[in-house]
Length: 147
Image (cartoon, rainbow, N blue to C red; front, side, top):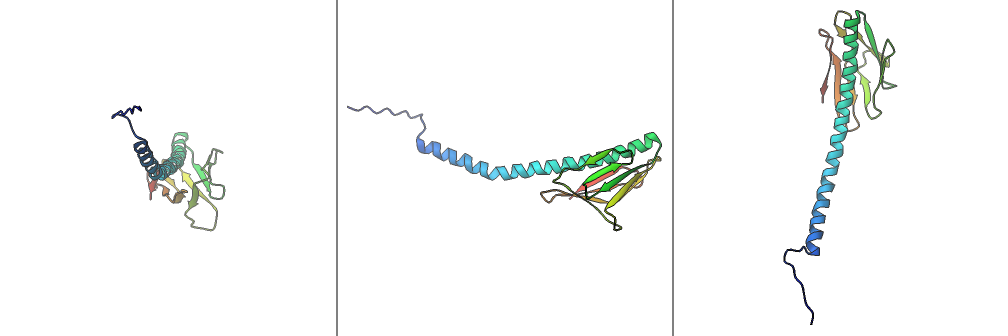
């Protein structure tokens, strides 16, 4: 005589497979969104670092009572101060200064009186995010707008 044990609180194999399918579908849907979010966060971080580099140049110009020039080299994807401080952008971000002439390098100037000037610069991320970095001519502070 065979004795069948049925436990009403146990899961069947079909129920476990259905739960695994639901979890898999949820993971497949959410993974691209998570990776896009990570790329966007990296882009915002790199943009903030560029603005911080420019703001530090502004602060050093005011505190040191000397003019400071920051050269933007779009071919090397770098910003370089005249006192040889260098900032390199990550390779997935493209630096594109607004060109008013045929030169590849543009310059930001920070004056000892707190003012500043420079080109509007576009940062383009690998996920087609874009930011415009510029220096306010009155306050001399670097700012950015995400697009």
